[in-house]
Image (cartoon, rainbow, N blue to C red):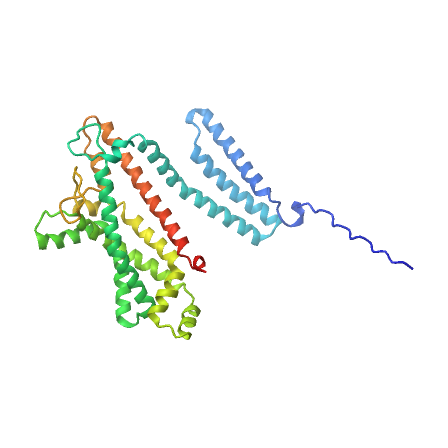
Length: 362
C-alpha cells in the first residue's frame, strides 16, 4: 500500500468586503472624495448666484461631511470603537493640515517676495551711504551671527549645568527655588529682558549705551530657561539602569554623567538647544533696545551699535524712502535669509545629534 502525500491546497484569496466587519482600504478615500464632490457642488451652485466660489468654505464643509460620513459608516460596519478611532484620526489629520496652512502660506510669501531682493550685492555690502536702491545686509547678517553665537556661548553652559544639577544633584529648597525661577523666566516677555539688560548697563556705563554684547545678554536671558527645561526633560529620560550599571563598575558620579548620561541624551539636548536659538534669533524688541541699529559694519561686540536681521527688516519696512520698492524688497530678502539661517542651524543640529548618538560610537 503506497501512501501519496496530497499537495497542500492554497487558500482562496479573500476579498475585503463591507460585510466582513472591516472597511476596505479604499473606503476612507472614496468617502473623502464623495465629501469633496458634494461640498463642491453646493458651493458651485452658490458661486453661480454671483458670490464667487468659497475655497476655504468648500474644504471646511467637506471635512465636516467626511467626519460625519466616516463615523456613521464605520459605526455600522466596524463597530463603535473603530468608528471612534477613525473620527479621531480624521480630526487630528484635519488639525495638522489646518496648522500647516499658515506655515506654508508664510513660506511661499517670503520666498516669492524675498527672492526679488537677493543679489551678490545684498550679501557683500552694507547700507553705509546708501539711499534708495542698492546696498545690502552684510552688516545685519554678521551682527545676527555674532550676537546669536555669543548668546549661545553664554546660555548653553549655564542651562545645561543647571539641568544636570536639577536632575542629578538637586534636592530640597534650592532645587525647588531654581525650578520656580526657571518657570518664571520662561514666561518673561522679550521686551522685559531687553529693558533689564539696558537698565543694568545704563547704571554702569551711562544712559544711551548700545552694544552688541548687550543684545547677546538679552537673548541669553531668553535662552537659558528653554535650554534648562529641554535638557532637564532629556536627562530624565535616561534609564536609571544605565547609571546604576556605571556605579556598580566603580565609576564616579561625575564621570557617569559625562560618559553615560550626556551621550545617551545628546540628540534631545541638541534639539532643545536649536529650539532655544530659533526662539531668540528672530527677536526684534530686545535687540532694538540693547544693540540698536546702524548702517555700517561692526564686528566688535564690545564697541558700538550692531545691526541684526530682525532689526534690519523692521527699519527697512518702517522707514521707507524713495523708491519704496527697494526698501520693501530688502526687508523681504532679509526675512528670507533669516529663515534660511534657522533652517541651516536645524540641519547642523540634526547632523551633530546623529554623529554623537550612542549607536554611532559602538
